Image (tube, rainbow, N blue to C red; front, side, top):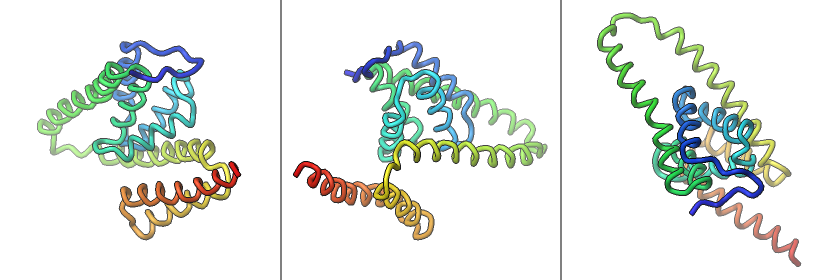
Length: 191
């Protein structure tokens, strides 16, 4: 069964569906821009998760197979309401996109010779970068608390951005070195 957040009311399955339906309908731009909507709705506005719980959910969503944003939503809703919550979140996130894609496909086939979308999509792309920077800033504030954390963050960025290390390998490597470094630090603290 789901873990009940300590000191917080657990939302109903219906409420989970409606909130994730809203996120699915209003969040555009891909995984990382949707994280800003997740954070605002689930952490800031509703208090369903703390910052560290949100960061954990994003991490789990990134390392599991499938669409990361859907995985993140499933994990969050499962923690809140178990399997029923996870199914409600999945339906809420997927249904708007499904119907929008059907509608856009119809419109595209009907009016494919008109090129109105180019300039609008360019500005939407720039706005998504701003949303992504906002999420990165908030997550860094809650997760990067010392020099060791900063070293991990900068190293991961460098390995991914410049060396083009596979994200799965990067996450596995980070997990291994995190276990070695933080396990050693915890061993010293316990001594």
